[in-house]
Length: 275
Image (cartoon, rainbow, N blue to C red):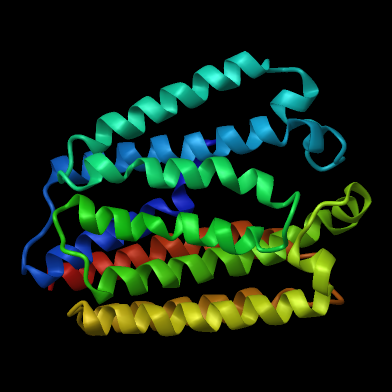
């Protein structure tokens, strides 16, 4: 579990908070941003820790993941458990420093974290569950700064959910053969490589459309729209550098491009909020 794992969802938590304040013609305070950051670090670390613990035996049988800390024996299960409890404590403490409604909602993502690693054992829908879970980041941050539940944060949830589900479909291609051998479920195992690419492309089209709609219904400005165009360009590039017959640059598409998308869109959202 690395701190940079948080960077996929954290920028969109900030985006959710900024858009909530954009409607109120205000900006979130530094204190709110700090507690949102700590809540996201706790949540993402907890999710990754649970996933590593639950999948330790599966990881041990996969050459790509066999050297992770648990299957390789560098960490014991009790140590990972302590880590997860500390991450949970950080999430709960941070949640209680934010708007009252999130004091009662934090068990929802925690339950989603626990369920996710078991889904690959029973259904190829696991990618969509992961997307929906990570997509909670902007919605949760919107509520955490006192925003009322409107269409804008729900569309943001959909946009991030489709973005993450789309690239997780492609990420699953790394383990296609191993998943088949172990009887695990993924979209690629069920429908094949070409169908996986088409599903990812469709989800990323929805992502771009949903980001645009979120900006419109959330009262964002022109700079937000430019950010949407930039996201569309990067997603197009991501899909141009990999194909069903050439997966050599899949690692770059998954990690590098998606990391740039998150940080870049946050930059556009910040500028839009300041104007």
